[in-house]
Amino acid sequence: MTEDEWQAHVTREAAREIGGWLEARGRLDQPIRSLTMRDLEAIADNVISRFIVLASRRIAAKPEETAVLRSFLLAG
Image 1 (tube, one colour):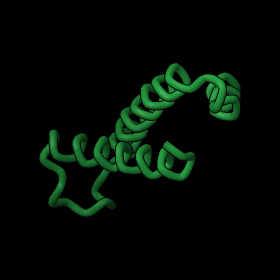
Image 2 (cartoon, helix red, strand yellow; image 1 turned 120 degrees about the vertical axis):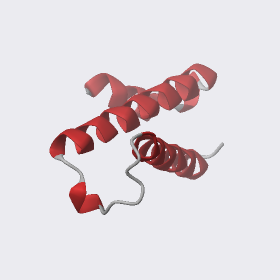
Image 3 (tube, one colour; image 1 turned 90 degrees about the horizontal axis):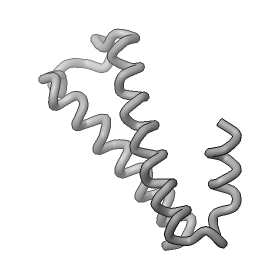
Image 4 (tube, one colour; image 1 turned 90 degrees about the vertical axis):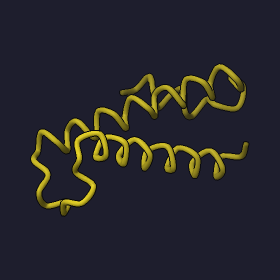
């Protein structure tokens, strides 16, 4: 998987996490402006967690090609 393909994959996974969070709370039909800061923080937590899982798997699969990604995760 190229870097561009991986970025597209991570973006799709983030969208799925956001949709899943909204769907689980019955909020898909409500406008975004109805979300509270707590809602937005919960969505962000879910998406960040998913990114970390995906990044960790990618690093484990291709450690020689993921130096930038490892640096990013370790800097946070």
